[in-house]
Image (cartoon, rainbow, N blue to C red; front, side, top):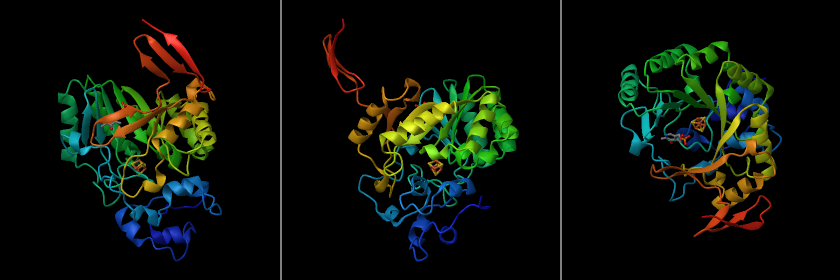
Length: 345
Ligand SMILES: *Cc1c(COP(=O)(O)O)cnc(C)c1O
Ligand code: SF4
């Protein structure tokens, strides 16, 4: 395994991930670069279409933007009462303590906010205010730590944060959204697991992975450690052109999650982040893919296909409805595409 992370165009060239004369200065100026040693190991440098490289190695296509793209594609800012908090739905908030990640995904929906040039880490005062907000809003049942990647924080700082949430009685669930278990699995040691559960609340952790090759033996060791420590695992993936936009890859990814005791949760339609057009799959294509999973593989392996509606309107289930009709007469489509009539009061 290589020793250190790739963080610059020079590093990319040294690792032979891009051509020696590649012109990537303008991209690197706009968007952070980050590839961990574990991810480097997963890349096949001889495959020009490698689905892992495609997720992390910058390309000049990122400078091409389309009119519908937005710097805040899912409308976080419209629902942010203060630094670090996004409160879009009544019973749950996002708490974004950090805006850095161990890797930088080229399709990132928060790419304008993350990275060394991004929003940084909350100051102690901002974090106090964010925790105060959660404490005074009794309707908040769940706190979702995201970012950036919250697991870049040291176990000591995470434990600290968890212990502060422990004192807020109405909070019952703490959920983490992270790529660390896959891209930096060595961080998931006993100390980290203890920190993630230090609130005494129920801890859920959403593992972000997009290709079955990301579910390595090292990642599995981390999943097992978290499961043994009482953390419930769910999945989160983005549907990405050239990475996982075919039935075989998606089926293998979802089965991989289930084999690792990770319950498939969301398959995100790619957001309208600037310079990510080369990753976008059409909605009808996405619907065709998720329909093809239904029946073909176990019900345990079915993610919900969601779109985060631009403008801050939240997530919508955009899997094609398998039932249509009204006034008591319905048509239901089975997993092989055949239609059946169904009557109901
Ligand atoms: C995605 C998101 C959530 C979590 O939504 P779930 O459907 O509960 O997973 C919460 N708040 C915001 C602002 C979000 O974008
Ligand atoms: S890990 Fe998440 S927040 Fe970080 S770059 Fe990837 S998609 Fe964006």
